Image (cartoon, rainbow, N blue to C red):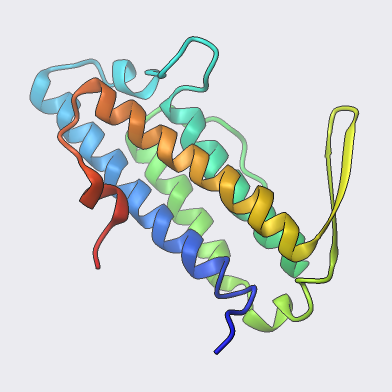
Length: 168
């Protein structure tokens, strides 16, 4: 049995974004229980040169949308980076999941061989679709999910590996 590009992308992103939404909720609950200003949690970062929690959620959203769009050809909604509350972060995650659920599996047909061009500043790189997914799309997505988890854990939010993995 082979794994399709769709199966390696959309369900994986949806599941992890659902977990991220739960982690955001746990961060909010922790702030309330400890009497913290929500901004302390939302603006927390692991290092001064890294994105804060809000930006990690935004990048996880953007990476999943962009990867799905590049591989499927289905236009992703653009979302301004204006979130400043836990509720707004969950709404962004929900909108991202709604888009991902709308992408038809058939639009991924042949995407493993599709050329994906990634540009960032002066960098321009062409990938085959499967190479893009496995060496950039998924690792970049999981970097931001993992860093959001790490920020919350570092703050003392009582979460662990089971929370990151999600329901089995």
